[in-house]
Image (tube, rainbow, N blue to C red):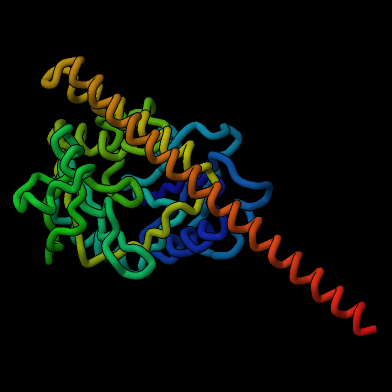
Length: 310
C-alpha cells in the first residue's frame, strides 16, 4: 500500500501527519509531493519519525492539488492508495480497521472516514451528498433550517451513521481506494487547481460504477488552514473551481444561461466575502494602532512622572 501526501507550506503539522502514517504497519511507502515549502522543511519533517520510507517528489513547483495527487499516484507502487492531507492525523489502528472493512467490498470501491475538528466535532465536508445548483443554494441560504427534508450537500449536521454506509461524496482530505480504480477514470481532473476536485472525482467515480463508503468508527483529526496561502486567493480558487464544476456537469440540464447565473452568484458571494475579510483586517490594524498609541502615551507619561520625581 502507498500513502500519498501533498504539501504546500504546511508547517509543523506535516511532521505529525507523516508520523501518524508511519505508525500504520500496512503502509509500505509514503509518496510526499512537495508543491512548495521552505528550504529544508520537508527533510526536517521526515526526520522526526521512522517507519515506512518516504519517496519525495519535488522541483515541479505548485502545480495544484489535483495534479499533485495524480503525480503521487503515478509514482506509487502499492495496489492500494491512501490519500491524506498534510494537516490531518490518523489514529494508530485506523488503517488496519479500514482494510478489514474494505476486504469485503467489491471493486471499484472507495472508503472514507469521519473527519473531526481538534475539539472532536464532526467537520463540515466529512460527509456529503451530491453538489448541484439546488443543494448549493440550500447550503448558501441555510434553507435546510426551515425545510426539514431539504436535499443537502454537507451532511455533518445530520445524524451520523453507526456503521459503514454508502455515500455520494467524500472529502479529499482522506480516502482509500485501489490504484486501479483511481486510474480507471484518469485520476483527478487537473483543470481544478484547488478545491472541488474531490467532489468532481467522486461524481465521476460513481458514474463509472464505483461505490463510495463512509466509516464512522475511524476518526481523522483534520486541522485545516495550516498552509500560509493567502485566504483571499484560496477563496478565489475555490470559486473558480465551483464555476468549472457546474459548467462541466450542469451545462446541459440547466442551459448555459443558467450556468452563467450560477457563476455570477458565486462571484458575488466571493466579492462579499472579500469585502468582509478586508474590513476585518482594517479593523484589526486600527485596533493595533490604537493599542500602540495608548502604550506610547502611557510610556511617555511614566517617563515624565519619573523625570518630575527626580
